[in-house]
Length: 424
Image (cartoon, rainbow, N blue to C red; front, side):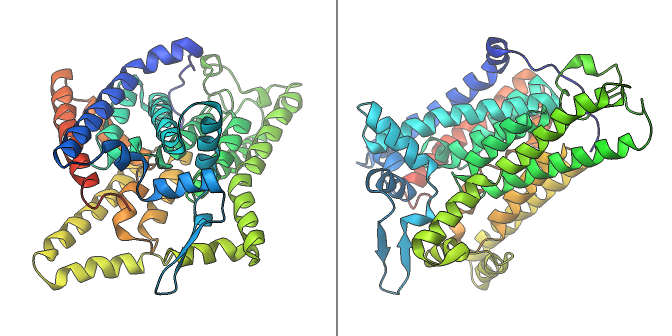
């Protein structure tokens, strides 16, 4: 972990103006994707709105919003698909919007995802801008927008909501807002099981910051003259050229206390969402703390270290042309691992490395339905920062051409995908 260039945090409207090019670019890419979906669906006699709001997981979320958690499906093979597998924040928001607006539950889910996707784009920009500068921030948002499965960002799924909470929690960590980071991490834990990745990032950053501070105290006053991105006040440029407050005689105890308390409170808040829902499920099912794992087992979901996924990939090489799909999967996994290695080499801040690595590990090492893995990786935006930096180095015309071509390809693929098997 190294010191980052200290950047001021723009207030209110100034922050929005700074992020405006990224948000406008993101909105344009998503609008292109939705237009392609509408045209493709109309040509096939299907409803794009239904594809976005009333299939697969979107149906389960709306059922939870409307009926609560009593719904389940028993399959002929004995498996039980229970609504308890779906975390509650998105259904809560759908219910709130339905109660306060004319929107149906499905429409409320689409609205939540639309707003959340813009919030996620802004959060990704804020993180990348803080770490690498404004141009890289804009490019990071555009790269996230043009992912092949980017259409999921516009579906009534929880990926956009989760990514927004995760991105802003990580930004709060990077700028020393520990209580905010913990609260957002807790909300992310009420959104998806991968909220554990945000919890891990917050706790790792806070504990590392506390340890670093304690070590610095033992080396005498005026040892440090710069703050890292993990420390409170790192966003204040005035701190870059003077000793840290804890090193100043007579001020250390009074200045240090609130910061220590904030970090401790952030670490305390972070796991409450995940822990609260998992314990509630265990109580409801009567199976104790492991009840949620039993619920996921009913969906054939679990964590086996990647063994099932490796077997799935290996089976592709037993025949042709499925071997081509196997090659594609191997290339894809290799690319993801390579991107993470590049993130480490580029010395990304610790919370981004912890979060990105955890999302990657949970997605690749889960024994869930293998077709869902691309969308499970959508929240892993720190892995895209090396690509964003590469794009940012290009001239404006070349970067615009690259983004434009990828946006068209993503829009066409998304329209074809949802009109076919689509996301599980």
